[in-house]
Length: 148
Image (tube, rainbow, N blue to C red; front, side, top):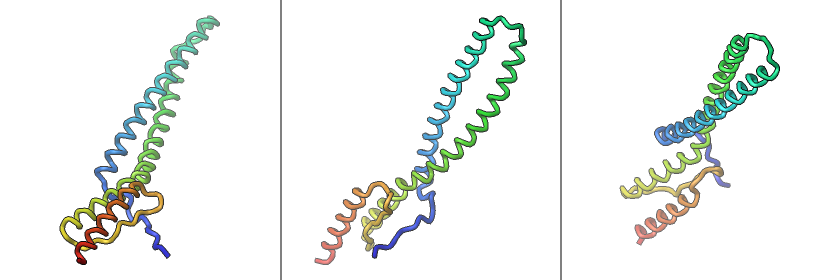
């Protein structure tokens, strides 16, 4: 029966994982700003045009300030929660990429140093399985050469 490999650490290759997470968070912030800005702009144009049509004598400035205050609080809280959630999910997801790359790189380095290396075994959901298979063929080839 094949041994199951359990993750011990999610941050195996910190620089790579943090860079990818940072890029993702950057794009999410851009999307939040764009969507939030457009929603804000469209909402206020609708409110102002409605007040012009009905010609109500209400203090529009007071209403806008109240709406601004509520929107900024809600959007700010939502943005912080989303950023933490995305960062956490990115680290977990990127472990499937960074872990195998780290393992493959470490194995190749040890192989180049002439050390006796074991075949690379990746977890079920990991990426780069075909690359690991190719490296395993190289390891097998090197072991066969060393036997002869």
